[in-house]
Length: 84
Image (tube, rainbow, N blue to C red; front, top):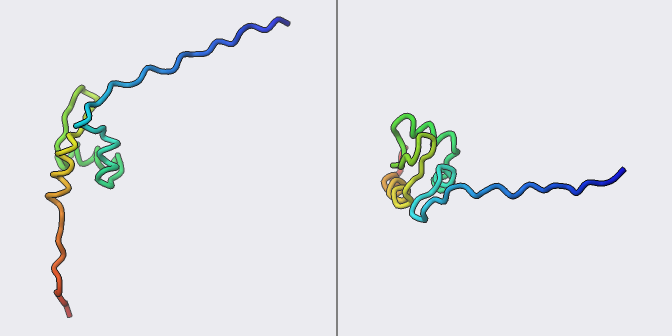
């Protein structure tokens, strides 16, 4: 039986590039220490960091907005406070 040459499929085309000042939802969740489903739920509830909807199914997060979101939630514990 004669062998036929195997056909290789070309690698998939890379997805659309996100400009450096924006991150994907997965990257935003990782930066904030959240799971992706949690970040999505927060977005749907109108909570969480600001985002940009670039298409009906794709959102990106401005990286500086993630930093501001984290800064706004920074808590400084009270020092020397004793409760009895």
